[in-house]
Structures are given as structure tokens and as C-alpha cells.
Image 1 (cartoon, rainbow, N blue to C red):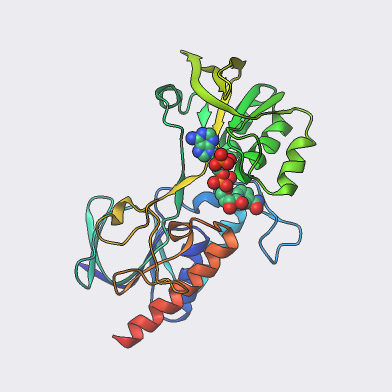
Image 2 (cartoon, rainbow, N blue to C red):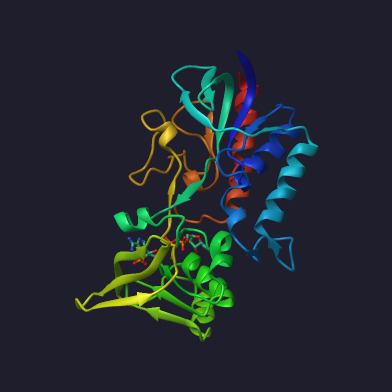
Length: 307
Ligand code: NDP
């Protein structure tokens, strides 16, 4: 069985930053990219708040740069998904793609978070046929059509303004009487003439036919129901952490985020560290994920030195 000194799971800013630091510390890290190489940032348009890019940078481009930087220092980056793990004793055992077993002296978990859905059967039925959780990936298909975005946070506002550049009309469906997004994002939404914000509305059903989504049935908090005609239904209602793999082994909070010793990346298991959105329900920024990837690498290096 292959034995690795430092195994990094995940390829977002946390995983790649951990890879840059651990490879420069000669820990010969092996990084598995997971289901979505490059992570969530590959589904965003422009990143304007990552220091060092005065003109902004595309998410995919930034992740490609981070990958290159990790490779330059010798990180062994592999395509594959960790399908199970046994953290009960060291070296830890992990299985890749249900087949290949690897043992690892230390693990940095940077598996990120995944988009949430409302949980309506009609939403599941039309997933990929008009229902999407990624405007950047799928917005193009709805050029000059009408679409809806669900959510009132920064993601929803960002997606709505992006879609407004492509689509005829964008409905922003918000369950509260206000937006949770930052003031700057809110202003962008309110200043975009083809975005109609529908406060205090919830989706009852996504409507469609054999060709896909045709509309949505909405209910106002006063009980009034409205149907909107749309071709695309985009979810932007937050994320859940990708921690199913570690349930029952790593200590998780009530939302499923990995608990770490405050101010560190240390989990309840010695030798297992967590970085990025998988342990961060609050900040969830590329820069905070990258910073926590650095912390995990330094914690991991110290741990291996102490062994
Ligand atoms: P948030 O958790 O901030 O917002 C989720 C939104 O979805 C809220 O408005 C919430 O409503 C709504 N929602 C949740 N569940 C449901 C439901 N079942 N039905 C209807 N609406 C629902 O998530 P985001 O993804 O927007 O943002 C996550 C983090 O990332 C934030 O910290 C944000 O600031 C940051 N971010 C920053 C960006 C940037 O700086 N460029 C871009 C995108 C995100 P309610 O308010 O009622 O709870």
C-alpha cells in the first residue's frame, strides 16, 4: 500500500495553499482534487476582493494559477475522489475512487462546501433541465429568457446581477422582507432595471414540461400565490459542508462543519487538520480559505516534526 506523509483532500484555495506550504516544507504532499477540481471558485465570475489582483481575476483562472504554484514546488496533484477513510489509528487509511487504498501519516481536509437546494420534488425533477445552483456555469443557456434566482445573500445578488446581463428579466425570490447581502451588492441589484426583487416570497413548486422548466409557483407570506413564467430557476441559498466522509470520526458542529481547536486547524484527531469552508460557517471567502490552508500546513508540519 502506498504511504504518504501528508495527504491533502480538496482543491480549492485552502487545499492548494496547504499544498504550496507543505511542498515547500518538503512534506511531499499528495493532493486529491475531488469531484469539482478547483472548487467553488471555478463557478464564480470575477473575484475582485482577493488581495494582489487590482483588476480582479476570473475564478477558474485563479485556481489554475494556484494549482500551477503548488505543482511548481512538487505537490503530487491527482484526479480522484476519496470515497472512505478510517481515522481510528495512524497511519490513517483512505480509499480513492472506491478502489485504491492509501495510508497517510497526516491529513489536511479541505473538502469545502456544496450548494443547498430547497428540497422540492419538482426542483429535483428539473435539475439540469432549467434548475441550477450555478448561474456562471449555466446562465449562458438562458440568454434573452426570463429566469429566477432564490436567495437574499451575496451569492444570490451576484448571480442575479450576472444573469441580468444575459437574460431579459430576472426575478430575485427572497423569503424575508430584506436582503441579507452586503450594501454594495444590494445597491447593484436595486440599480439593475431588469431585476425584480420579490420580497417575502417562497417557492411552492417549480413548474415544467418535458422540455424543462416553464415557471414557478410562489407564495407570499400573506398567502397570495403568484405564477412566474421562467425558463431557468437558480438556487443561491447557501451551502453545506462536505463532511459526510468524516461523520462519526471527526467532531462536527450542528450544521456539519468540522470543529477545530480555536485559532488552529487541529481537529479532535491528532494528525488530521481542517482548512477552508469545511470548517468555516462564517467567513467563507477565498482569502480566508487560503489563510486557513496556510495554518493547516504549518500545524501539519509541526505535528510531523514532533513524531
Ligand atoms: P448566505 O447564507 O449569506 O445567504 C443565503 C440566503 O439564502 C439568505 O438570504 C437566506 O435567507 C436564503 N435561504 C436559505 N435557505 C432558504 C430557503 N430554504 N428558501 C429561501 N431562501 C433561503 O449564503 P451566500 O451563499 O449568499 O453567501 C455565503 C457567504 O459568502 C457570505 O458570507 C457572503 O457574504 C459570502 N459571499 C461573498 C461574495 C463576495 O464578497 N463577492 C460573493 C458571494 C458570497 P435568510 O436571509 O432569510 O436566512
